[in-house]
Image (cartoon, rainbow, N blue to C red; front, side, top):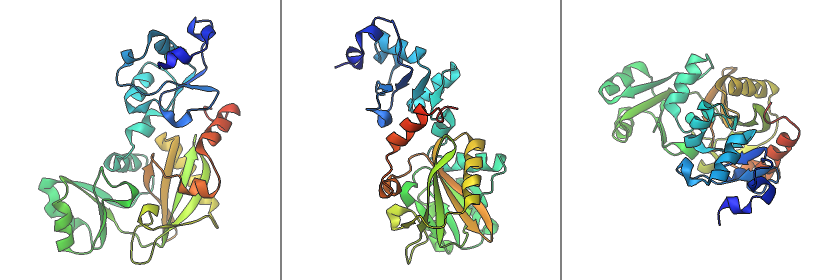
Length: 275
């Protein structure tokens, strides 16, 4: 059944428009938001659905495809187009952080013809990542010698090399509209170097430093990431932004009995989501 057939008659007749439209399903069921679903072509939507989108005050979770178009024509969207453009793009994130002068571990990207420069420019151990396939801790390697480096280089056309900073835990901060809604330590399991929960990292909600939350909010604003999980690491008394995760996990939220959909709805109703 078409979503348009479920739209109230007075809306379908053009007498009023829903203030908020969503394409992605994250807000499905929220009464203040009409979810239409993501379709590959704009004209896959009915004329009425297209009219609803173009008259809405905000379009939520439009997907990368539509986020670009709506931003170009001046439609307000959530999350921001930058939140989509940099999702899963570690190389782009590094360049952005450097341009914005955000503290970030020494990181360089190498083309295949430049691979022989890596050992001259980084000391072992260092971190090597598969640039576009290293979510949930996968595709992330601690390189301790030349043999390990060669194995990694055979896996990728681009090398993403980052200095290794000694640490026992990192800090994940989840932010909605640049404001932290939850922060927690991710403790590294014994025998590993990754704190990611999918690799055995342990959640700890205790003693979250206020200065790190302030920095996370500042970093998110600078990058215009308004629905994001930022990973921060402290080394020698200095905080570093490691990466931004737009597909952040829900395990910590569940442990705190927090439902993201309800948090976003509350912010929407109180006027703190789109300000």
